[in-house]
Structure formats: structure tokens, C-alpha cells
Amino acid sequence: MINKYLVLFICFFVFIGFDFSLINFFEIQGLKTSDIFIVNSFLFAITFSFFFLYNIFQKRLKTSPFTYLALSFLKMIASLVFLYPIISQKDIIFLPYILHFFIFYFAYLSIEIFILFKDSRQ
Image (cartoon, rainbow, N blue to C red):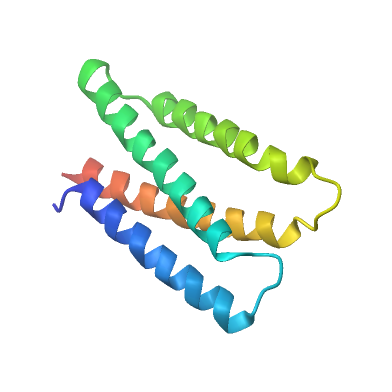
């Protein structure tokens, strides 16, 4: 199988390209190009760190479903910490930013599940 980090890196660039074209096509107000890059970079970083930690735990310990659940829970906590400054501001409309974040959060999550499923079959 192709290296999972390479697949993740390719998906990162595909998602950024898709995201820029989607935002420009629908002319969504409230999202800047810097927001797009920051959100995708954060999601890529936590997904990359998920795979890195999962590989470490897989080599050192017997991997169980609880390992995946614990790492997913850490990703959720990191996402909430990332979104807290946006949500706590009273003077901006944050709904497009939040929806944008979670659409791509679930896109990265689906790629993550797909890669782990492919690894488990080999």
C-alpha cells in the first residue's frame, strides 16, 4: 500500500484546492483565504499526529479499539480548544467558520478511517 502519510499529504492539497474553489464559487461571506489555510493546516496537523501516535501505540502496545477512541477524543478536545477563540468573540458571526471547520473535520475523519481500514486488512 502507498504510505499513509503520502495519502494524507495528497488529500491535504486536494482539500485545500477544493475548499478554495468552493468558497470562491459560492462567494461565502465571513471566510477569508487565511481562514481556509489555517483550518486545513490544523486539521492536517491533528490527523498527522493521530497517525504518528497510533503507530507508536501499535508498535509498543497491543492496539485496541480504545486506542482509537482515546486518540479521537484528544482530537475533539484539540478542535474545541482551536475553535474557542472564534466562538467566544461576541462581535463576529461564526456560523460559516464553524460549519466550514466541521465539514472538513469529517472529511479528514473519513480519510483517516479509510486509511486505518486499509491498514487493518493487510
